[in-house]
Amino acid sequence: MGNFEITNSKIFELDKLLFALNKWRNENQKIVFTNGCFDILHYGHINYLAKAADLGDKLVIGLNSDASVKLLDKGPNRPLQNEKSRATILAALHFVDAVVLFEDETPYNLINATQPDVLVKGGDWQPEDIIGHDIVAAKGGQILSIDFVKGYSTTEIEERIRKS
Image (cartoon, rainbow, N blue to C red; front, side, top):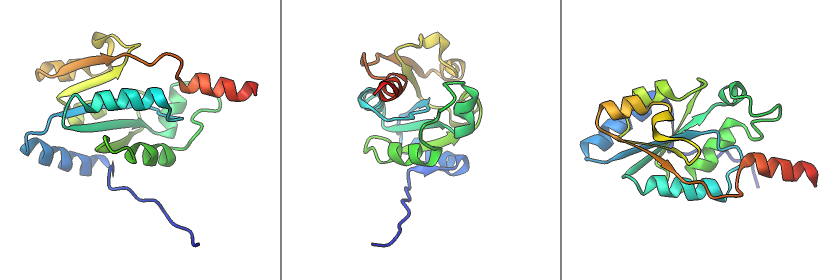
């Protein structure tokens, strides 16, 4: 067996994503946006992302780049997986329509560029505290917080691995 490279048409550079978003909007598709590091994809992530996808027609994920994860100070070993791996894994999910990397500490500029109809974060965020809520509210969109599944977090998984 030879070496092979996984490519995925759902991983976008911003300019190509904006083109796709225009096409989807012309088809009256409702755009849902969420963001995160998604370092070790686990049941809690899948549950959250599936629920987010159900809120519209197209799910766009803003994925923190490796440099952006470091800015968040999630720990010296994070991210555990590089951005290419994390993006490819997310793009493999059938209910994810687009993954786009961002370099900033927050996705504010990305949300401003993409102008989603629905902005979603996990249950630890109040809607009024979600980065970009002002952008989405100004256009009459929805800002929602989806409950976490208790007992599932990358930090908890990392700790269990360290203790074993």
